[in-house]
Each structure stands twice: as C-alpha cells, then as structure tokens.
Length: 414
Image 1 (cartoon, helix red, strand yellow):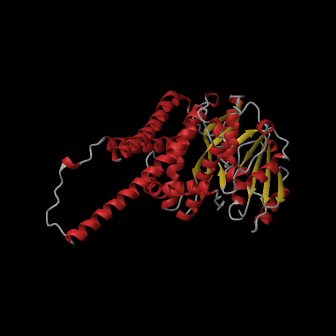
Image 2 (cartoon, rainbow, N blue to C red):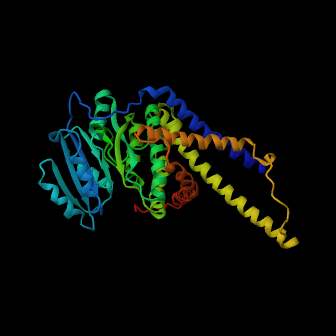
Image 3 (tube, rainbow, N blue to C red):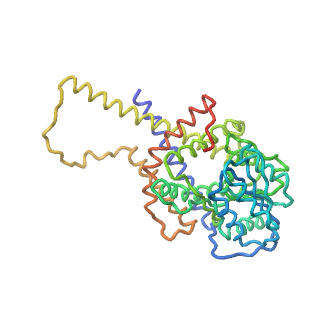
C-alpha cells in the first residue's frame, strides 16, 4: 500500500516539475517577444473605449479608482466611463453621483444583482467598439490603456487583452506574500498568452472588442467568477486572448488571512465549477492548449495539493500514534545521547531533489514576474513570505472549495 502512495506522490511531483519546465521552455522560445516599454507611446488610431466601474459598497476606494482613469494617457474624447452602483448600502452612490457632471461619464444605479449584471447593464448602453472593466478597488497606470490598445492595433485577431495585475502598496505579511504571488502570476499569464491558453480575463482592466459579446453573448454569473467564465466561453469559441505585460493595474489585496481565505475560496470554487460546466472542451485538440494544458494542469494542482496535505496530516497522526504506543509501553524515555550531525542522514531521495526543482522554478517565476513589472530589485523578501503563507493556508481553501462543490454550497462574495 505504501508503494502505491509513493507512486501517486511521485506522479504529482513529476507533473509539477513538468509544468514548470514547460513554462521555462516557452519563455526561452518567446523571450525576445516580451516588450517592456518606458514612457508614453503613440497609436496610429485611437479607438473609442468604454470603461465600466461596477461598485458595491466601495465608498472608500471608488474615488481614487476614477481618478486613475482621469490620468490615463488617452484622448479624453475617445474615453467613456460608466460608474454603476450595484445596490450599495453605504455612500457609494452619493460619491459616484458627483462625477456625473463630467461629459464623458455616465452614472447608473440599479438593484443589487451581482457584478455580472452591472457589466451587462453597461453593455446595453455602450456606443464604442471597445469595452473594459476596472474594479473599484484597483488603480490603472497612466500608460496601461494605450499599451493595451497597441496590442489590438498590432494584431487584428486579438479579441481581448488582459493587463498585468500587481498588488498595490502591500503593508503587512499577508499582502507581501500576495505581492510575490501576483508577480509570479504576471509571468504565468504571459506564458499562457504565448500558448493561447489564458483562462481568465481579470476584472481589473481587461479590454474587449465589443463584437466578442455580440458573438458569444453577455456576461454570466459564472459561480461568482464571471471573468473566468467569459474567458472559458471565448476559448470555446476560438476568440484570441492576449496578455499585455507592461500594462500595469494596481489592486488592493486582502489584508488578513480571513479575507484572503474568502477570496481564494471563491476563486477556486469558480475554477472547479466553471471547469465542470465546460468539461466538454477537456482534452479536445481543437480548443488548443487551453483544453489540453491549462485546465488539466489546474485540476492536477488541486488534486496534488489535496493529496499532499492529506499525506502530511496522516503522517502527523501516525507519528503521534506511534509515540502514544511507545509511551504506553515504556513511559517517558528521555535519551541522554548527544545529537551529532552526519551527512549520511541528508535526504538524497528523488523526492528531495524534485522539490528543490519545484521551489527553484517558483522563485525563478517570481523573479521573472518582477522583471516584467519593472521592479527595482529582482529579489525581495516577499518571495520568502510567499512559501509559508500559501503552503499552510492554500490547502484549506482548496479542500473547502472541493467540499462546497460536492455539497453545492456557494461561497459568499466577501
């Protein structure tokens, strides 16, 4: 039985190494295509764009979000802004109403129905060929929009372009750990972009061609992950999604373990259930790397983390049980022998070296992500914070998401 468990363990470790190596090879093949621009750029033509800011109880952040849109390096007569209050119970409506005096801003108030309903209200009222969303807890870099639009200008086949989302001004241990995670995410998103396998169009500032919604329909609830569901639907309908690595969006990340847990529980629950909804595309070559790489590897990640966590818990209880039997047999037995280090006891099994490869690959991914986000230093203590936070907490939200899926319990938005 133990040998079977070891085989399963090695399979999961091998797949983890395979994913990291696959990304690295993709990076080597495409590294010259990664462009990191400094300063402003000019387009041959500036298409009109509508940016929607859906709000629910965002009185503390929405003003700063709108201010960041004012500072975009984009012709003001080509930029329309929709501010939509989705039935807030705080002063959000009062705050956004003050912006109605601006000629390029429209404000809307509706009953609470969820973010996807706010976005669909915007889609019903747009008159531009491009549409995007900026979450009310995020800030846009002044050059973000023009850089994203340059991707549309460069490739007429691009149906959506996603930005690089990074953590805005992390203040504590939890947020600094997320900073490293988001930096790594920039690298992964760029590699998935090269592979045509992006599985989420983030709420912070993804820009779409309006024809996407004319072709595949409006937003759906998507298990409280509408930005993931629309990406799945786009991939199923062969709509190309690109990643603009130097279009930076700064998001306010959860500041506590409890808030982080709730957010990631919703994200993983959304991944599991959207994948179940679109299970018909799995391992179908006509849907490209999205179906034969991104989705399977996401599933493997959940299974491997769940298995490893279960194995760790089992080993802990097995150890405690053996000590209990020892205590019952001989009582307390404190050894007086000196502990002497011997290199013979260093774990030289393949598992140990595979784990070094995995962790080294993660550090490499974080460093490359920091490079693409133009951080001053390529290594930060945030990288060290990442491992304890996500190694300890992540299994809990993964297992809870699986549990909720089995029992059909929908996690709360916040």
